[in-house]
Length: 468
Image 1: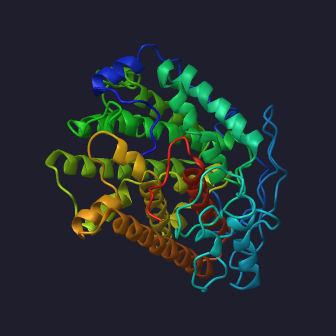
Image 2: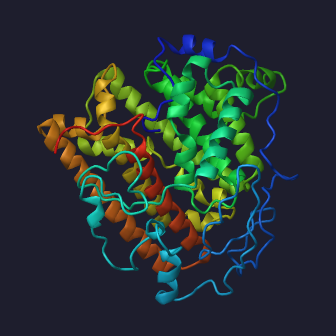
């Protein structure tokens, strides 16, 4: 996972684990607000699309791709919206209907929820993205300024009631359920602003319970990154063994009766594994088996990327630019937008998710959002101990560029990936206008936009270099 960190530096993994494990974990976690049988409280089943795209038994009800986000609920309750019937026809022709679906909600501040301007129209930089501080009408009052020249879509400020409730719930979970951090790390945890992050990235989540699925997983992923990989107790030495054992909290070990108890006990041995286990338990209870397996697969990709970066750190290798970009396709945000349907309360069927053109869209989204992290965290990483690889650093060394020119070229690389993402998404929407495909594409685009919003506005963590 890219750099978001939750904690101050620690000298070693064992020391960090000892501090984080000072309290015994709570018992088996129960899903937050989950209904019996593992389903989140959601809409009554809507009209299912015809075969072969009917949801599997026990899956989440389909919500129309054209449905606007639910009205924000208050902090005291998370009530699902009224059901929205799915369109009767799956194979609607590309055209006005497709453009309307991709355009999403209308009205002041909702332009950023659009997937693309229209199918087949090349994306072009939005004028608002070129001027420092011009984040669009809805986001003009938000803290921070966007990177000049960066291609992005502004989003409305996330609903404060939802942000407050998600923030409260995830902190209770982190402190009481998984004992994620010692008391002195509380400021770092609060500064991460994960509630604002997840509400901005998932504008179509029906309830706070749905948002919590993504929020717990985001915190758990970053705990593993910080304590195992980065300089908050992490080290490249021995990383493979630590990641393998942590991955079994997501993908359970099937072993003999003699050795199973030792593995079960190990899941509570440090904060990252406790967080992985609990967050995944909540997710499994509230998603379909194919959605859970999809997430495990993408987390294996993430862990592979961690290992590649760790190997380069151990040998002092600076990768070629293309090699760095290959690593970043694995060590990136991909596990987050790939669960956008789970958070939205519906399912993109496995055969549609596995389409090569869908996989390209998801990969491009992950690659572009990760370079956003490289760019906004650049000065933070320069000031941190040790040497941190990011795209500007690699460009400067491999292409013999000044720091400024390398940074500005990294902006261009990001913009190229964003244009490719939007063009590929529009092509897929035209080629396969299935309601769940259209809604999933719109959800991934919203995640891309929300990710930029969080990086731009989190001035607690990020500041821009003086290159303009």
